Image 1 (cartoon, rainbow, N blue to C red):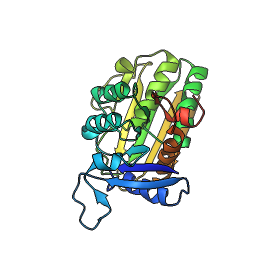
Image 2: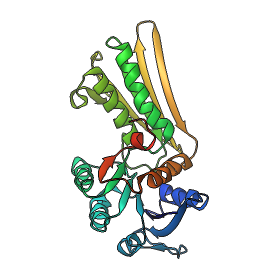
Image 3: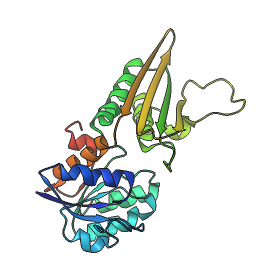
Image 4: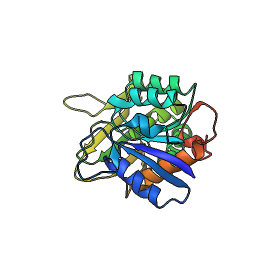
Length: 253
């Protein structure tokens, strides 16, 4: 049995991880932590330090602001960590990279097996098509999502830019407004939709002369991400200190 603690237990994702863990015979939930008020949820505690002591792996779906403190606590305790929190700054990502020198960490912008297959696929398509095809990414999420564009959209753009030998810092265009002029051939457009209760949709468009390729992933339920996080937690036990991705977990790296 892999003993896990879920940090961010009262959030959308934390709740689904806990629910899916209850159906997984290889998982034992030993702690549910959230800093929000939790009247009516007596099983949830605010004391992450105490919960971590009982765990093999901590699964974090919280806010980017609290990630550095969580990383320090978990790494000092010598526990493994799965980070599914999105919207991290460069400094927060650096904190993860530094901690991975002492404990094993899986950090991924998306825990879905399908999306991680998509990460690889778009690079292959971009490299095959080469120049002459405009690239646009459209992502859609529920109206309560706090960061935009999604971490998944950013990763898709990064993989496409790498495949095409482009610098996303120069060629990434995040939405368009006003008289923008003709589209630069090197642009990689990234657009965010926030509406209703959309779980998550990502479409990558490759548009060239006389044809258009569209590759879409739609998440029907947050359970696909929750099960991915649990899969990562089970895989991570016993691994040496290192920063891993879901591609490692899925054997696609």
